[in-house]
Each structure stands twice: as C-alpha cells, then as structure tokens.
Image (cartoon, rainbow, N blue to C red; front, side):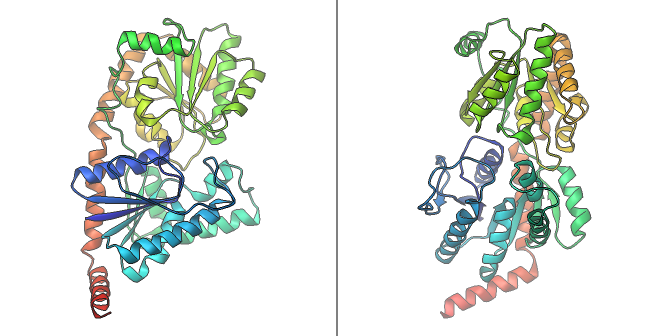
Length: 409
C-alpha cells in the first residue's frame, strides 16, 4: 500500500506527537508499505522517509511548538499542498494526524475517494485550554468543541493513542465511525537499560554537573504547563526542604528560560538541571542517567508515550494518576493524585529509599514494554484497519468510478 501521512505540525521535532508519527511510518515501512509524509515547511528531515513540505508563510518563519494563531495560515498552506499532491500521485490511504489533519483530509480528499484514518491523540479543545490559547466557557471554546465534535465524525475510521480515548469516542460516535485503540509504542532495541556503560554514565553525569553517587530523577518531554513542570519544580523544592540530596534532569523544550526562572525563584537550582532540547536519537543515553522517572502530566485526554520509553529503560516511574498513564504502567506505577506536588515528592522519595524495589519494578516494566508495546504490533493494527476500509464495497465502487473518470479525461 501507498500511505499518505498528513501531519499538521513541524515534523520532525523531538517530542511525543512527532515520535508517534515517525515510528508509525517506520513500522509500516518495515511491513513493505510506502509512506509519504506531508507536513509544514519547518522541521527536520528523516533519512529513509519521503517528506513533502508546505511553503513558508512570508511573515512568520520562526515559531515554537504549541498552539498559535499562525497555525491557521499553516493549515491553509497544508491544504493547498495536499490538493497538489493528491492531483499528482495515487494513494491507497490517508493517515491523518490530529484534528486539523483529519478535518483537512476528510474534506479535501473526497473527490479522490481515498479512505481517511484519523490518528486521534487527544481532545483538540482540551489541548487548546491546557495551552491557554482559549478560555473555558468562552465563545471560542464552544466553537472549538463544535468543530471537534464534527471532525470526529468525518473520517472513515479512528485510531486512538489510548484505550481510554477509544472508549470515550465509541460512546460519542456509536457505530457511526469504527474506533480502534492504537496505543503508543517503543523500540525496545533502542531504548534499553544497558545502552550506556558504567563509564559512559559517569562521564555523561559529569557533563551535567552530577556526581556519580547522586540520585537522579529524569523527565523527558515538552516543557509545557499541562506536562506538570510546575508540579515537578514544587516537588523538588519539597524534597530539598527536607534535606534530601536529589538531582532532577529535566530534558525538553520550549520555555527553558521561563522554567529556569521559576526553579530559581523556588530555590531549586542547581538541583534541577535543564538540558534543553534532546535529540530523539540521544534520548536513550540521557534517560540512562536516571534512577527514577517522573510523568506529572495533567492532561486527561492526551496519550503519554514518554512512559513507554521510561519502561523500556527499566526506570521505575512516579506519575500523576491519569487514564493514559495508568493504562501503560498498570499496577507497577507509583501514582500521585493529579496536580498534587506533595504526593509526587513522596512517591519519588519512596522509590529513592528502596533500591531493591526500584530494580524489581524496572525489570517488570521493561518486560511489559517489550512484550506489549512494540511498534511492530501497532503496524499490524494499522494495516488491518486499512485493509478493512479498502475492502468496503462503497469505497471500492467510488474509487472505481474515479479511475474511470480519470481514464476518460
């Protein structure tokens, strides 16, 4: 099959949504399928994956990730690029990421009768609220809720990043659109606890000013408010006030300077080390520096793929108790009520005090990541959904008529 992956974002950047897009494409390629990604003009190219980019907006060439009014212009340019690509190429399926991608593909690809699969990674409106792009109970909030509600019904099938999201959408959509859970995955051959030797670990720690015997808590992800960075800083302050010796390696972007100031005001520098952006290829080595991982994500609808990286690295994890994070960690997670920084600190402290428990939890988490969350399993699910749609008599008839029209013209 030839699959068009529509990504309304600046692919590739080193964070969760982009990792999912990348690894899905790689897993499909491993099964022999051809994947072409159509995305915004900015982002890093990936060897081995064809990427088609939009033209840049002339008035705004540099921007950070996250919600922005400029995305409306980017999506217009993405729509234009999609139409040109569809006019010149033949695809079997469009795999549309995020609500913007699902809306654009479902509307514009209709003349070609190509089935559209929506890769749902969380509520659009909730994300905008978390990023403070819109306000609760505002007219804009109501508008986006409506747009989201309509978009969920447009594609031919929906794949969700969590089982919780799949259940929620099935309750909303009924039998109107088939919904299947496609949890995030991890490459256990890349993310593995022995990726760094003992000597490399000491050298890397020294590079960040961390002593070999200091306990290290790691976080890897976007430095956004809904990721709970503020709670992480508060937890660090709590443990420091108790006289505990703990270093926090916070890896990610954007807003490093802002969070650095927040940590400074809380008195937890140099306990917290902000590394800035970490390339996806370097993530395993950096995670190998940790003894414990934290996932203080506050969003109740988004996935939490970073947890699978933690699990594959055999890192015991303290997480806020959300459906997505419990879905991955199960009974092996150490949970804190969402938004409770004190409970987060207590969870970290309990693991640091129990090295034997850390080792056992890490081994069990690694085993589950390998057995249940490989991207190869995800590729089988995606291919099965594609094949079911392509076998649909209505779509087959529409595509046959389209080919006849092309032949006549």
